[in-house]
Image (cartoon, rainbow over all chains, first blue to last red):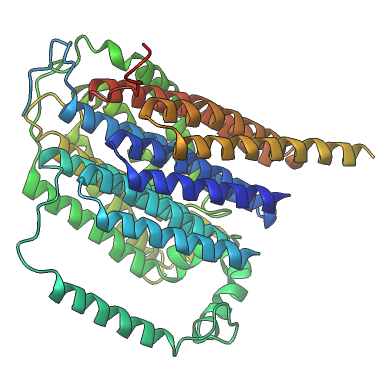
Amino acid sequence: MYIVVSVVILISITMGLVRAYRGPTLYDRVMAANMIGTLTVLMVSVLGFLTGRPEFLDIALVYVLISFVSTIAVLRVSANRYGTARDDATGSAQE
Amino acid sequence: MEHLINIVLLGLLMLAGFAIVRTKSLLAVAMLTSIYSLLSASLFVVLDAVDVALTEAAIGAGISTILMLAAIALTSDEEKAPRHTPLLPLFVVIATGAALIYGTLDMPRFGDPAAPAHRHVAPTYLQDTPTAIGIPNVVTSVLASYRSYDTLGEVTVIFTAGTGVLALLGFRPRRRNTEDTGRKKLVILRVVAKLFFPLILLFALYVLFHGDYGPGGGFQAGVIFATGFILYALAFGLSNSQQLIPHQLLYVMAAAGVLIYGLVGIASMLLGGKFLEYQVLANDPVTGQHVGILLIETGVAITVAAVVLIIYYGFVSRRPAPGDI
Amino acid sequence: MIGLAFDILSWVSLLIGAIFLLVGAIGVLRFPDFYSRLHAVSVSDTMGTALILVGLMIQGGLSMVTVKLLLMFYFMIFTGPTAVHALAEAAIEGNVKPFARKTGQ
């Protein structure tokens, strides 16, 4: 059963990778990366149960936090660079 | 079955590498590199290298992506077209790859128990760790006790790297609250960051002190600490994060971590042992090992967290406009 | 007997979760524009994650493993939607236009 789930997750990761490669916008790639992060977390947890080593869950927990923070980071960079709607007082147009 | 998963993961790694080479937008490349790290970390999980997987996830997918993004934010995010033909580099790459593959022909089979790596010192470590050091995680015992000289060297390298970045980039303090008005868009992020910030720090402490029993240790814990503060800086801006952990404190912390490590060594010399021989730190040799490992792991974590934050602050504070990363 | 019932429950949960993930991935691959793709991945991924974690929790029983899974559940239930919201907002700011048919408005 765990094997079926991990195979399904691997297939989904492949699809996400194709989307990350094809783009077309940066946001598509970030979305794909975020999705692959989620899927990796699930795969690591399922693999932990498959091999009977539940300490893998520590790694999965780290992944959750890390992939969230890096998604937010890339969005903040792109918002500073490409953002056009500068409604806030501080947004003196850079670049 | 595990072999199949290995092969699929390796194929996905190749796909990701191909995508990285073909993509021109550097922000997208940074994202793809993070995917690459996540995939290779899963590969390490399947191969049972749990500590390596944790490190790869925290450093490869997390911190290095964030630092790459911070560097891209200072420059351009378009890759320049090369001015020369790619034929010579291609030839060099193919020749190197062929040499590496030729080198693998001599290597022992995958998982071969008779491989030299498994026969030299590894059996000693595996046999002696439960009695001499008394912790279940052999990786930690090798890293922090048997090879503590190496680890001291690594921490010093990290400290030097932080000093180098500091010398090159420096830190430009900003006036307070120049970047913190009218950002209604960030409300959700801020609420979530507030919820998560203490939990991330708690989890870092868990990784630090649980490193004797499961995957983890000083390096990973330091990186997770830094990630927590970076999340805070992303949500609330650099000047607020400066209020939380000022950069002067970071300089002290970076040096203090290495000092703790070295002082443990000197303390064990004063108590009659050799440099970094932890047995003398307590009445019982096994307890002494525990105390020594925990102390030096704490030192490592402090230095790593401080250096990562110094590098991050160094990049981010150079942005002229009030961008937060 | 009761053990078998729990096993079946967790297997069903894992399977349905996996189907949700697969459907989300197909949506990410096949949908025509960014916002519909985002919609596909966000909704189905949250559901799939929840189901798979619940399935694993049933297998874990009352132990430290389940506590960690609960913690992961808590993290993911917050991070997923927050990341997707930030993505959508960044895309709107970055002038990504929704897909619309030219005729038949």
